[in-house]
Length: 84
Image 1 (cartoon, rainbow, N blue to C red):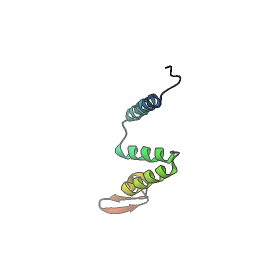
Image 2: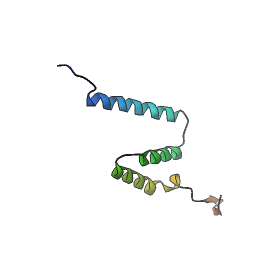
Image 3: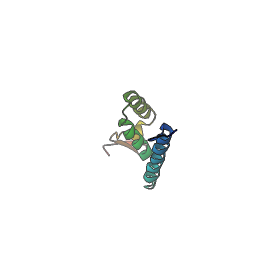
Image 4: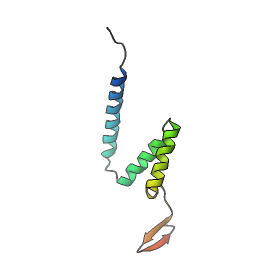
């Protein structure tokens, strides 16, 4: 039997390889944990599956809000320093 085109498993393997290459390229920048979280958040916003996008962004907002948002306030020697 002859197959034409690409099998589903081949397509998934190729896409996974490309994803791994993208991650490796990003890691070359020497990014921080905070930057990783920001990248995951921004990529999740680009998902076509709206429900999955909402779940992921909600989870990140709940677990790591300090990594995603700039509050305009920062602790300095135990005191809140307004509008840093």
